[in-house]
Image (cartoon, rainbow, N blue to C red; front, side):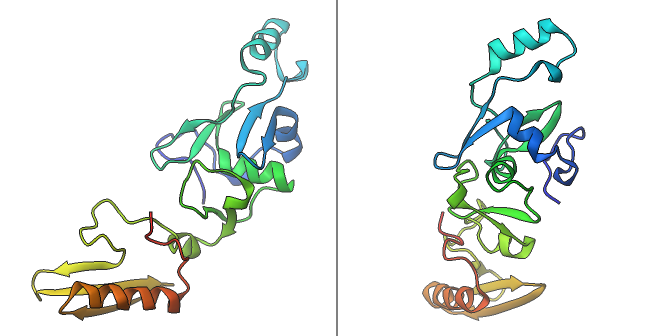
Length: 191
């Protein structure tokens, strides 16, 4: 389930606004990936003062542009949290995405439509950057102290493949071949 983390008030996105309501509130530029607030109709406000103040302050400004810890853009619509890439998808295609969205280039703030694709959780994990704690500089390759060997490993659909090598280069080559065989995205571990 795609949700914004670290805020208990944020709704899971399958309980989202109607796409037609999103279209009333926001515009999306599929080439730049930017979302912008539209002038809101009076019907969205309890009083004239709120209507005038909101439109003067926010209409035509960048929307859903707060950066999350994971690097994605997010924001609030009617006091509920939304991820910008999911809103962008919904505005472009007219429906909410029915799975996870992957940023193909690994940049969670690049919400251009050509950079987004619907994937399963497993597929999404096959297009990730090198983790910060990685010491080999190559995804799925690490040094195992107790065996004094380099290990190449990968997992897909719960099945782990693991092999040990004397040299780091052998482990890297094996892991690259394994990535291709298991269908990892070409950008996996490259950023």
